[in-house]
Every structure is written in C-alpha cells, then in structure tokens.
Image 1 (cartoon, rainbow, N blue to C red):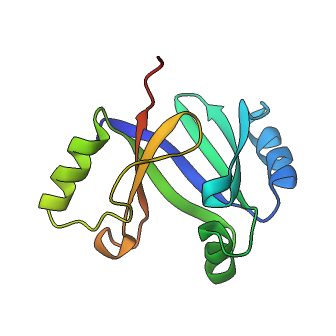
Image 2: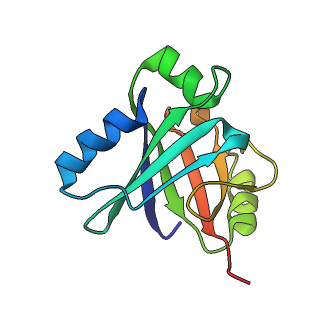
Image 3: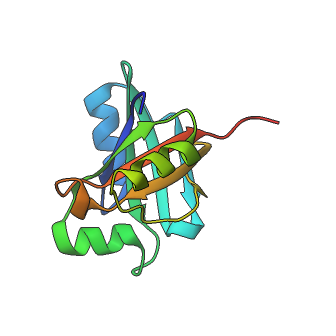
Length: 135
C-alpha cells in the first residue's frame, strides 16, 4: 500500500452533499459517475493532496444503502493505492485478512478495486485501488 488513495463518505443525498463539500473545500467535484454494479453514484473532490469520494445509494439493496440504514451518514471506507492489486490481495490473504471479492472489480474513478472485511481490520472497511492502465 503506497498511500491513501481516498476516503469514502456515505451520504443520503449526493446533490446536497456536493454543495456542502463544495463550500467546505472551495471547489466543485472534479468527477461524478455511477457504478451500476455497486448500486452507487459517486462524486470526487480534491483537497490538497487528498481525495474525498461521496457515495449515494441508487437502490435499497446496495452496500451503501445498507450502511446508511445501519450507521447513518459518515466515513464508509479508506482506500489505499496499490501498484499491483492481485499481488497485494494475495499478500493480504496470506496474512490472514478476508478479501470480500475474490477478483478485482471495476470501481469508480478508473480503478480496479477489492475490499477487506472490516471484521479483520478493527471495524474499518479497507479498499485497495489500482489505476486501470490506459490502452
């Protein structure tokens, strides 16, 4: 894990939250997109060297909808940049961590992603992110 890639925050209303974070950072989101496979709409902000991802559920069965129902709005995950997601997943499995998806999947912001189960990481959902190489 090379650095924190972003911090994900679950929100009930992306439009309202975008306005709030725009006021907070003084800049609009640099990107908004939907990840249909995860049932989520996202927006990304840059603040200095840091990125914040806001996540709004697009269906009631999505992981974000379940998180919001259980815990309310707030920090959902911390994502770490990795050079080779397959090697990092293998290393972490050997260390005893539970990987929630057996193979990396396409996430937001041109990333391949995998998640570690929070039961093995002191209750924190950890996301591994690798930039998808351009062709």
